[in-house]
Length: 370
Figure 1 (cartoon, rainbow, N blue to C red):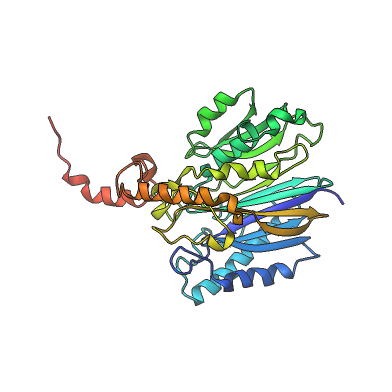
Figure 2 (cartoon, rainbow, N blue to C red):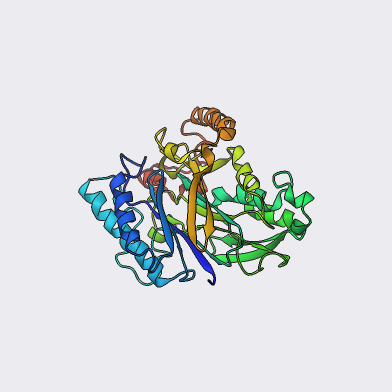
């Protein structure tokens, strides 16, 4: 049937209440609009949420960056914004940073993770959705999935893996990219990826070409930065990712294993604090404590001729209970720091929050010290 395009497009169009959750009416609005295109523009769809972000999952054959698909998503977010305004939801239309759709939703506010590929005989695909954090929050788990033998046993015991993977890494400050190979350039990669507020993994590709085409990505992450688009702080970016699994790729369990460690990410309250990311069931993706702590949801599907068989709520497993407990302990520890670093972000990253307005008020009161 030709290549399949898997599109995950999300936006914060209104929180209920505050920044905690998506109102059911917004999900209903999106479902009604997508239903009209099933069997036409779309092969299949699923609507969900993570925190205050409305998530549209779509399969089709229009390719990446399709004007029709992006236009459909934009129109849905606009209609949902209208509903949000009627309900007086908080921050209605927050991620809709442009007045009108111009052919591509990139750079307009919503986050996008899309990939086009040839569907295999068995095609497990996992969608990861984060709330209250930034794109770099995916650096550590995606690196571990595809490059860390302590996480992914297949890198050691499956000869199909020994060629490793190619990483597309973006410098989101200078708007540049570099392609790097693991394991050959592992140390150089880590030098970049450890600076997660600037260097982020955008895509991962297979290298050998024996089981999978080398030009078809096996993982993709949204990298939209809201402050760069709006030129001011309006909220965290709440990234999403799509990862394919099995048959020459990490197994499902190897894809999920990095989240058994609740690593520290930037975001949380007012986008200004470091905290642990908690892997949760979709029903628990509701950020309330100090507008957090940051959450990640994983929904798993099997593709069948582009149709979505699922989802399975993968972090609903009790196997992640210890990660959740550990994350809550870390959250308690970090909160005890109050406004002090390392809970609060370093000054360089605070430049993109509302802190500069505070500094502006104080600038004339500073005196020179001899």
